[in-house]
Length: 391
Image (cartoon, rainbow, N blue to C red; front, side, top):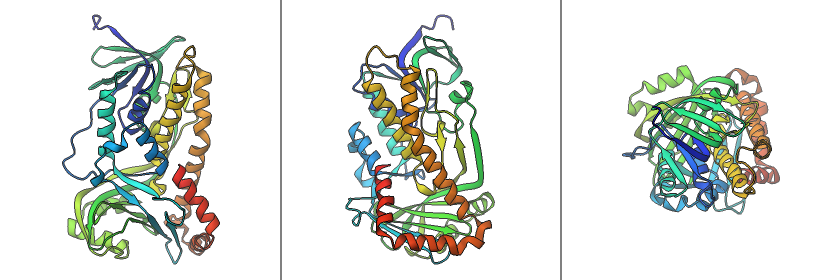
């Protein structure tokens, strides 16, 4: 253990997920040395990934700018050109990219495909070192640097540590940053289906008494389904046979796309809101789920992570050479740049989740009236679409 030399970097990213890797790749044109600590690299995909994300046009441009988007398999990426949102009664609101003067509202992409391409891009970068497999064991800070001891005895020092290791971030906890979790008592049930009728690039969302159901268009006649529902209902859905599960999801979606045939087995993940009182500390910055989580009904979770990476990369790319990467004043600029959007989205998604909660059925008329009212106001709809395009 004592014979291991200490590795030194300007920026050390803990976590090789989408947010952490996109930050590393976004630093490709700097003179900064970048290390990435990850326990396991991305595995080769044998089938469709049940982890599907709606990437906003703004973040599609970010991925294109850092040289990743053009390497994704176009046959596994789908545009969202329109969207229908239905309340739990007669409420409805429609969004159209065409009406907003845009080519698409979002792009639907597999998580694994993005991670694999980001990983390969990082591997090709001369200024990036991928430490994998590697597991952090201890974290300490001095006035001059931050230090991580790895489980295999290696030691790493950096001017700046970036926590990109998820909602249960080891790095954040080791740094002593306490966060507040709100457990929704729900799970997001995800699966991919072949559809009887074409979706024509349209996404659907239903606010139901048993949760929020979303259909996201995949290439061909395929969709990704996300059903945010109670833990008990999620367990019931996962226990169904493939045919019965498909029937249940088709019925919940009012047979909008006809019969559904299961392509990938369903999976479920717990839904939690996580608020961090701060996203920086001396020589430390949080990005992605390590900094915040939101309810998936807005589809903005990964978009917030990419926006974190872009904002931090821009600051580090533009900083004068005499400014330390871990300079607290520099990091405060990052925190200020990201706080407003994160707080606004957390407030909005949490409010929508509570508004459409099953125990608030007395508000059904109000919330469905609100959807219909918004649907009849083009100016408001255009503002909502414009935000979604830029987020």
